Image (spheres, rainbow, N blue to C red):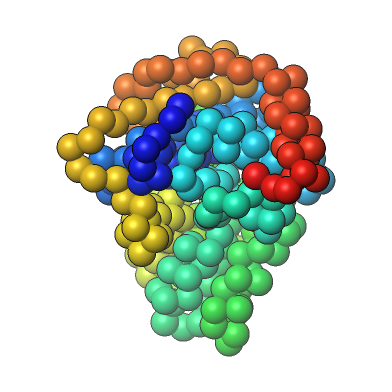
Length: 289
Ligand code: DGL
């Protein structure tokens, strides 16, 4: 696609699957004039149980795919991919690249009154220590307690958001966390905002929940405004989706995240993603992208 004006270009967003739609939904709500291209790597989800090396490889491939489409800003909606690959992706591309860790960490540092913050996420996110590092960098005195909740992702994908099974699992994961006397808890995974009600019930009213999807969307507005890249209201808008596996399933599960219809979904082959990443490497050797 060709655009006369950089501000008219779409925002590119990728996630390991449907979860990043929580971020996209907030972006659509706050920035309705922006066009977006969302890429969900549904054939290779979940990233949260994989090694950092594998997540970096997938993230570079997804980014190369979106950059080639012509985007003005790249958002890594996946917490796991943000935690392990943000710096590498930033170094690989010339356009601005944003992850979800920093906005969530900043909001948590601002919200805590007793200086004790909990973070929950996938195994890979928690193992990376990215949230703890970022929160402590923003406010060195804060104590950060991090814990993974691996069953939350499949429960959400199954559409179990509110019943007694979810509550049982949440109690099992969060009882220890509750004892640590935190007053703020970062929902450090794309899927967890959908479990907010249960998590709130288990943690109690005294604990503020930080939704990294909302924090991210606020941040996108600020970046586009300050860099003069906000698209003008009233100009044509498109919303396009690419997935690496069956579009039907993406559409069905995606509705839980977007509460909206998902149209214009195209399936892409993993092999073509790998080719794009190789082409990107070659381009970089010849002067960058
Ligand atoms: N999108 C992932 C995240 O936010 C959750 C799903 C996965 O493990 O890929 O960490």
